[in-house]
Image (cartoon, rainbow, N blue to C red; front, side):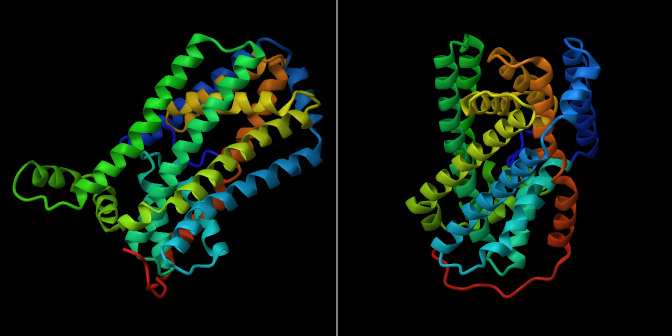
Length: 348
């Protein structure tokens, strides 16, 4: 699903965003070109045409379920904060956030602001909305870490684990612990009185970055009781882990659609390691990086290059490209709709 952005990108720089997209597309084209050198183009097209529609429909249903789970993370936190909000009303925010993060790669700032704004339109206070997003962020990285450990165990059992994979996992573990810690420190810092010293200077600098000042203000308003709620965090982690399962299952379904008969563990290891490479890699959104690593991981586990490439491209079609149009429509609606009545009774 690609529910969180890959890499950190300079916020508010349209030229950087265009260059990022162009670079990613060029790398993707290079991956396809290199892979097709190992087989005939005709064979590759023949495999793609032979994909069974029933499996593709199953993949679409799996991906739709990922957005239900993403909304569930926010919904549980809102309920625990004393906010009564219809679950189905926040489901579209998942697609809208994905669109904002992909089209405007700003390290997730654009998508986060859109969700906070969308929750505000539904009458949810900005601080509570930001608390739901922070719970989602922390539970995401814990679930991600569990998924990486599972993938390493699968590769070890298959005899395909090598030192570069372990090094990549170690680097990701550092990221998985660092990002939530930095966010929590930033929240704590934003709630302090900046005074006249270096905090005031830092606040002034941050206020000049588009979107960051709004994020810092929302963090300062997020209730500590909500962030410390263990049930919200546990429920969020389970739902986030289930999203990884659904994404890996989508890749496995693609392999089934192409006639491959590999076990689900093969697809799970390939998907998680490709996601890991895209997360710690230099390319925003993982465009090109994800495809290259996913094809490689499937190939070293016994699949042919043409089947691995076809399945990977189909997966990215469902998780990356197809959500673009509905995401655009939903993002426009979230940014243009009128505000609604605010809720009361939130825990602080």
